[in-house]
Length: 513
Image 1: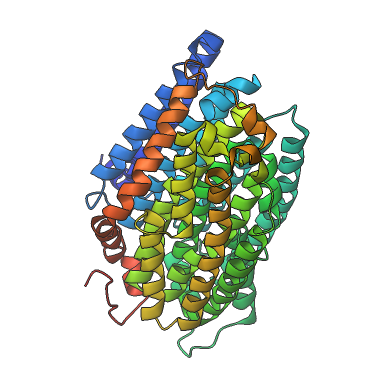
Image 2: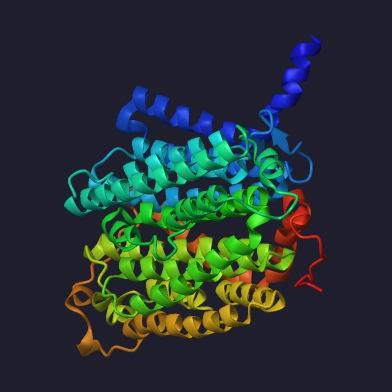
């Protein structure tokens, strides 16, 4: 009896109740589809959303109450992982709403798509709290393999097949490099896999570090940089974004990226604390390259999806400022920005889906004069693009203010100035789309807009897409107005996470003070 209770207390399975709910929901979706077939297609999205919302509710109940460590220390359910898992689950909720009509129109199985998406969500959520090398790699591969499958889900679309092949080849190479970095870390620590134990074993009292540890750091950062689309590990992003189904792109741009940043915080701060200056230097270079290349190359894009792909590269550069700041304000601002980015980016992709479902194109030039035919869609896309550009009073503006202020407090003056300059560049290509939709005269309309069909909201899956867009727009607007209480909530997750406080002996100044 004592043995079983001791094992139960060490496993502490209650900390992964949100993930267990998603697993149950995933199995129910597959079983119901197996029994009922296409007759159940209308109910499966709502079943998936219900499971995801219950998972988010379980995360809320676990705030400040759950025992952090589970499964013999391999998973950490502290407040930091809870808020990242919440961001990932929310992104999946909106992605499911966006995907119903899109998948229905292609004639593929909605149940299979939802099952793969939920599996990717599981991998991303486990990755956000993984505290052990094996757990990290298994979670990362669960996310990656599911992403490859979703990217090539439209089997009869040659562009989707090409995108999936490119993503698979580059992703497999990235995983191999990342795994080699983890194996070096495992060997240098004397066979430890727990992140805290690794940190204690590889720390040299004299302050000297081995060449093997430096190589391990470089390989690990290469794997993380691939996941967050940082230059020069970004090559897959434009092609995959352009060729993949748009709901998949939306999830990859938010859920997968959030998991990558969660992994970066936990792995680098915990295990590579002795090399903080080194990984700060590397991420500074990645941030500079990402902000410059992402925003400058986006200027020349003619496809909305490719433009948002390069935009996401630039956005990753902005978020890295918070990581490099290595302060409570820095980590809080990067999490707040990811939360805001969730809604403004998914809202933009919802508008792109609505436009492409009716026109069959995502070329920027074809949006000319859209306001004349669809003012509501024009308004929604304009709000999301202006928020991505950092125009007040929308969520993106406050997210960048918090990031740049945290960087300035940390003495990252050059990075902040570069961030401001590249933000101005990004405003140009976002406003270019808004101007094309709004300012074009009737005789300058694109042929696609001239023949713009009336929307039929009674088609299967159109209402969920509309709900997803409205929720994204409301959240994008309200997150700016309610930025202070939201930032306070995010800051609480940072200040109550032991690994972040242990990494900095000197108290940091808070943005809210």
